[in-house]
Length: 142
Figure 1 (cartoon, rainbow, N blue to C red):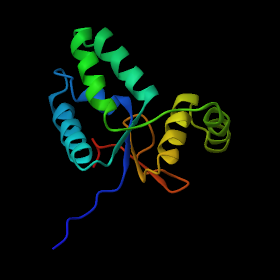
Figure 2: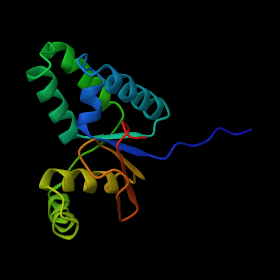
Figure 3: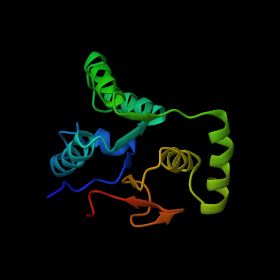
Figure 4: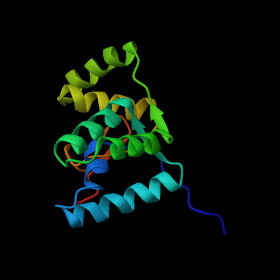
């Protein structure tokens, strides 16, 4: 019997942040399960924007030691990382205009699509929404 292939998924920074949030034990457990499943299968994607947001939040709000946060960013960046180019910003403005998302959420959608993801995991966007073949899912509602 062959293994089931996991669809490529883009992770918003909020899912990564919850994986370290001791104040939200249920969300921490769920976030860790999703991260482990997708990252171990080589099906997880992050962007430079996500890595920057993760580092900023965990060091400021969660008071994580910056050297620990740096190690985590280094580990996360070993997985597929989409790097935004100037033309992506132009295409992101079309997503912003057509789908009425925030500027930053539009950039995440563009990055996920550019990295050929089928799923975007985020707590901040409309669960179940599809944008040009990309399914937005909130792992805390699944």
